[in-house]
Image (cartoon, rainbow over all chains, first blue to last red; front, top):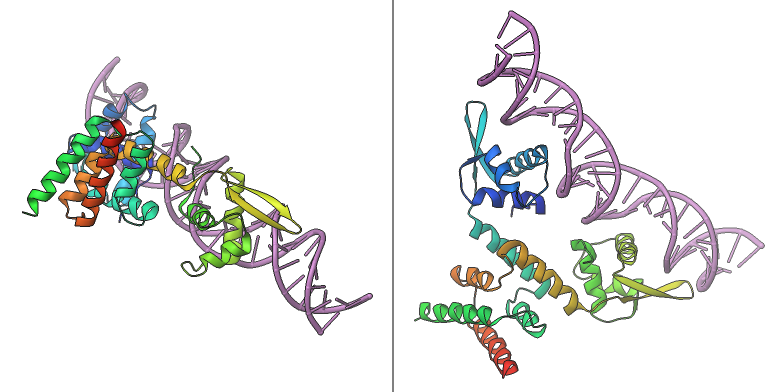
Length: 124
Length: 124
DNA sequence: AATAACAGATTACACCTGTAATCATAATTT
DNA sequence: AAATTATGATTACAGGTGTAATCTGTTATT
């Protein structure tokens, strides 16, 4: 699995919002949430390319970046990894921990039920 | 939140199995799963103390370590953090990602239903 | 044409991490 | 008593990370 740092992920996440995109577009998107210097973001873009998380095409002087994987694919792998490390690979204990500490809202519950329903339909 | 590295967490996890415990007990427990040198584990214990994740009492020449928090407490915080970073704080999308990629077993579903049931009882 | 502005590339640098080795000291063994 | 062993403390060292600054070359402006 490609290992991304927190900061790298946030840059990639800004690209997932809409791609392909240039560095300046990504910098623009991040300017609201982050106090990162433009140079910082460019460094991170370079590292993402080096790690194989992004590819780019040249357009004159600029690069136009595209993610090498989908967000859902990446977050799924991270989730599996996380759940493996902290909960021996089982998902219910994570949800249970949230429930016990009152972190679940009615909306969360409804959404979870829906996921379960769909899973069961899928199994016919 | 106290930030622990992967290796630090694994040492702490070995302590959570049963505590308080000495360094050599922890080393013993980890010897099955990990090929870590004794010195490595002691370094990690030192870092855990420095980060405030462990405390210790002296017993002659040895230290007897105790975690400063419970496992459930730590994993809950890590989970919240994780879900915030990757799923904007909502838990269902994580579970949904698992479902869509066929990562859920009937057992997982049963456990999840149970968690939901209990949550609903709790709300009366 | 000279200069300023902007692109990516390279370099910087302190702190974190993984993974120990060495040091100082006390206890145990010979 | 001397030597070995075991404990924690200190030091090591390369690679990753956050956070840029500087360099180099091109395009746009004056």
